[in-house]
Each structure stands twice: as C-alpha cells, then as structure tokens.
Image (cartoon, rainbow, N blue to C red; front, side, top):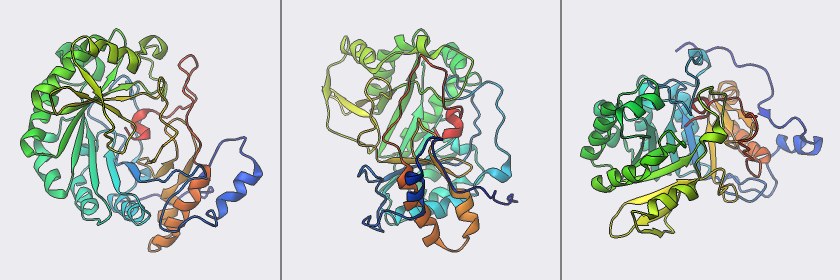
Length: 363
C-alpha cells in the first residue's frame, strides 16, 4: 500500500481553550506514572482499546453516517501492519482488551491477518469484533482460529422492511445468517447490539430480547450517540432512554441486576432462569465516564481520548516518524493521557459539536 507522507502538525490536538500549563504537560508523561501502564490525570487506568480498521461499510445505518458519505482515501488509512504494531505497543502498556471496529471491519482486505497478529499477543486476554454480520458466513471460522474471543453483531430490527429502512442498504436475512454462522462456530460469547430509536424500533425491544433468549446469546440496547450530522431524523425526538427500555422489558421479563462486566460501558441485567444478559449503554441517561478505561484509534490513526470530545493524538504521524522505535510510540501514548478529558457532555437539544460520524469514530 502506498502511503502519503505524514503531515507536519503537532501530534496532539485538544480543546481550543486549553491552558498553556495543560499544553506544556503534553511534552512529558507524568513523573510518577509507571512506564508500564497508561493512567490518565484522573487516575483511570486504560486497559481497553477500540481500533477501527476502516470507515467503509456495506450498510449505511441512519444513526452511523449520512446516506451520501465521502470515505477516507486509502493513503490516509493506517496499514494493517501499523495497526498490529499499535496493538503490540498498547499490550505492552497494560491493555488487555482490544476490539476491532469499523465501519464494517470485515470489508477490509486481509483483515484476518491482523486478527492473527493481535490474537498472538501474550497480554491480550480479550480480542473482540464489532460487525454488522453480513460477512460472518465467510469469516467466522477464520476469526475463531485467529483468536477472536467474542463477537458483537448489530441488529436493530427483526422486521425486514424496518431493517432496510434503518440500514438503508441491508437485507435482514444476511445478518441473521451471519448470526447463525457465528453461533455454529462456537465463540465464547455472542452479543447483539441494538440502537433504539423512538417510533423507529423502540416497540421491538421485547422481541429482540426473546430472539436472544432463544439462541442463548446476549443483547445490549444503546442510546443513540449524537455524532455527525445525519439528516435522517431529529435525534431529540428519536431519543428513547435505557430507563424506558427497561420499563418495557419488565412487562415481559424478570430482569435481575448483575455485577458482571465485559470491560466496556454496558451495565448488565440477567434474564431470570437463563444465561442471557441484557445490557444498557446509556451515554445520556446514565453517563458512564467516571470509570472510563477506554480509548479509540480511528482508521486514519487518531487516538480519540473520549467518544464525545475532540481531544486526540496523531498516532499515524508518530508511527511513520518512528518506523522502528516502539518506545517513542509508547511515549506518545503516555503523553496523550494528559489530555484525556473527564468525560463527554452530550446535549440532544443542540446541533452536534462533534462533526465526525460514528463510522469515522470507530463503532
């Protein structure tokens, strides 16, 4: 792959009103911070990294991107070798969970090679994938053999016409076939992810849980993230809270609070008498920033320190300026901890201040 020369801007980008004192802190890691861990200025230890391998997707979900998207040129996207190198650097700094995301990660050519490299890292205990499921009939077995432990599959409706409307391009049968391929392959856990939109699919939450129960898999319901201008619906009008969803489910299922966690933002409830867990990801109604242990790497190599803020570090520049010096890359990762914010502050009444779409953020 031919890559463009790295741009010459500084590797750190933070809020415009950041103080000079805070900016100067970026040049060195905190003096008492262990060199083997990533710990931010609020004492939160980073153990989980979500890495996007592409912003491209074979669907166009209404909450994820605009219908007519312009995707990144190839030269701006990290190579698979660069992503594997980043994974190694993160694992040597205490990260033990890596999630590969997109766009749709399985449309990236030779992506199974990347899973093989990450799956061989001794420090990685949990290698997971988020996918829309359409490519799983082709790749499920190879992913399991590469070391993938868990798969999250997006499923927002069980009604073909609704599924088509939400995904714009999708056919429900393809995703359902992908779910069955993953089940047949025997992954440790399979979880469905459903973004719930009022008057679009909120009346299907019980049916979706029943679908998960019948297959012995988990499901998480997600409040829509206000990232990017999507033009399809008013996010404030479409908002349906986790509390509303749980109230709907309680009419049909006995949900028992659980202390279980998968290391991410989901808060889980067990369906009584079953092994199925129901999770809720609630960036609006139950902010999960206080114990955040996560960072994201976009397909073009920006390290996003917060889902709902623009604080970021240019890892592509660091990688290409130091092609054989992992210690320098790790130094940049350490320094980035100085600009990880306390949390996001989503407000559905305002136009989004984050203009990047979810597919560019790394689903």
